[in-house]
Image (tube, rainbow, N blue to C red):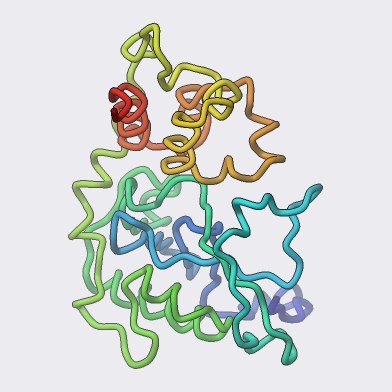
Length: 255
């Protein structure tokens, strides 16, 4: 955690930083300088490499499940762990930012952030700020690779993504299909997650597309909701993810 005294900012309206970094695990990594907001998505559909690092493998109110720890490994200390090694395991995010693409917004002309810009010069500057702040926070190398940014050296035009991913941005704005489109007698994305997770084959499909439900606390909280219902209330489940999951649930079991 990095902070600055705010006394001067309050008394004299003096900024304490050029830009601020924010985001969610496995999602967009974002930066704002007060005018622009830059939301950097992953460079590839797989959203990899993505790892969780911890010295205490617990969630808010439970331990990690065995399947969350199955691929854990002990690695060398991170710069801020005071010499202590840490567990590293594959990350289980809620959806992938790739489905939504990289976005740049101008808060002066678009305070509601509804009209993503295609401005290479502005993106280049904001991507540079993002990279500098990630380095200052000792972000692991895997995060730079995931986002398609340089671990060292300058950010240049080959690192820009907003224009390359603009079709994803447009596609992500499509409305959620009607629930009836998926209705059928067999398991589908309108089936409650509790039922899907209790069936071995359906569970494997759900964990591939919605890996966060491997967290037993989270799975219990959303057990009564279907994937379609989750998609209706959270941007973490895109229409493309929903359709991919439904197609896998509909596929005949291998003989």
